[in-house]
Length: 243
Image (tube, one colour):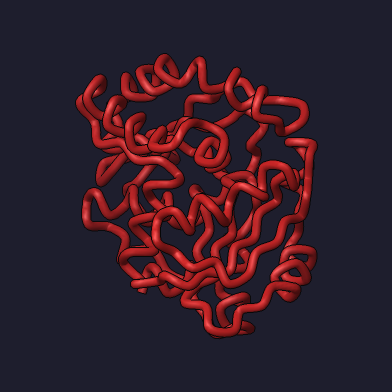
């Protein structure tokens, strides 16, 4: 039998991803760890240039059609894979959008924020250290967002990257040095935001080095999507969340 002959791709589960077009990270990260029998399918939203609120709002105009397009693939769950919208769109946007997408497609939907929210609840994490790559003007709204939802932000910092295509180039050494500048004393978890920030190769090492669970946008999206079909336990080496 030749490679792929007779195969049913995604026989155990199919994840639909709606991804900003500048993001070159989430697809290879997810494919590198997807359990056997699972597949991921992507629709992209146009996003380019500098990361500004105006650019994100332009991108969001195509959200409905992108969700409908990936739903047509016959996926079991749809993940809206953009975190920065959480801090730019109006309060409650994520929850309302996920509900609207689920209703319009008849498919369970989640977002980067709702996945992280559920992961934090699973770990019982309330005291957080948060790192982002966002431009400072956007990052400055992050602590207030989490605190408004009952979390205590003990430490936070940003790489202050403005150009969208620079974030995927952040390597493990730069990420480790960045995390090393955060004060993790008394924290229940380290949270690293952005779906275009490479993290899968660093999670285990960061947890070992700092002694706290590490939650990243792509990790929590994958965990939550797999959990829809009870398959999160099939993933290894992505931190305490999957244990």
